[in-house]
Image 1 (cartoon, rainbow, N blue to C red):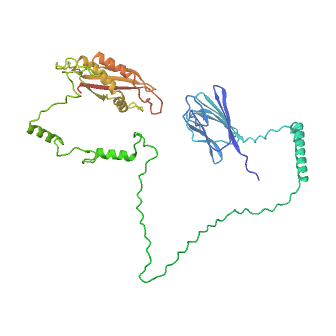
Image 2: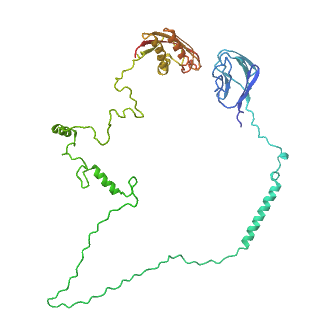
Image 3: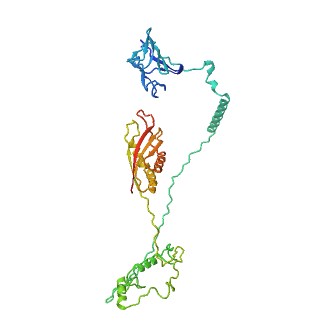
Length: 435
């Protein structure tokens, strides 16, 4: 006993009386209609909802769920039902049901049909297909067969004419070892002297070996950085002479503290107590013979009028700084992603330097300049300032700020649905001179 045949839904979509899509839905997934790309029937036409389930399966039967403002007619079981656009929970579809739905500029034709049979794989007739032998190239087959026969013949001839050789018996490899025998000569025996009364055996004198003193090792090549002929020991000895502070054999290594000049206090006391004459330099080398000899003749030194006191140049009064405060103007909630707080944070972080520069231009003319400037700007869909206006201070400052505003960039404003729109904002700048 076989079960009922599977059923499917055949749907055709027409736009302005032109067939744009025709599909057959066999699976049990719902058939959705709307402007979204996720819908199985996606139609970018006005008047169609974003996403709506048009056909669904309930207990193995198809159910039609017309969308609001959808008109049409349904024919099933010999009756015709008209749809006037009112909301309907669901209309079960019988076998062979068909209908027509209209919404906006789109027309949807549907029909409940049996699942079409799977088309067999297309095959060529037997007379056209041929046999396996027809697919083999005869010339190539002859060449391969002849080559195989020749190789087999050569292999058979070599196997039959091979001469068997007797197996050789080889001795294992033993390492050659030649022993060396060293024979020591026997020591000569000394004649023993008879022991007589009053005579003793003479004692052989023993010689004590002198201590071995190691000789200093001299490097074969001289140490880099030293003169030829000097070794590392010589360098260490010279360093010890320079760093020691005691009287050495080769000369004094430091200044003796008992002599005047060991420190400055003893030297000054020695000069004061003994009425010594103090001179700078000596008569031999190192000092000038005439007054101001060679002064100012160096390559990097130029002294003009050395006896004249240098005067400071005139002071340049620095321009006073300014302090700018941003305040948002009360305005209704526009329902966009770009808010006034985001606008203020962006201006204070990136564009406050340009506003201060414009205020400095006004302070250069009037140091007591202060006041309030009203800013109105429109941010377009790309986040750029399409229109900017500044009023309230001097024309020079207002024009400078308006020019700065045209180069500002903000995040693109979007409405609640995510569509980019233009947004208008109003701000107030309070400018006060100061640091």
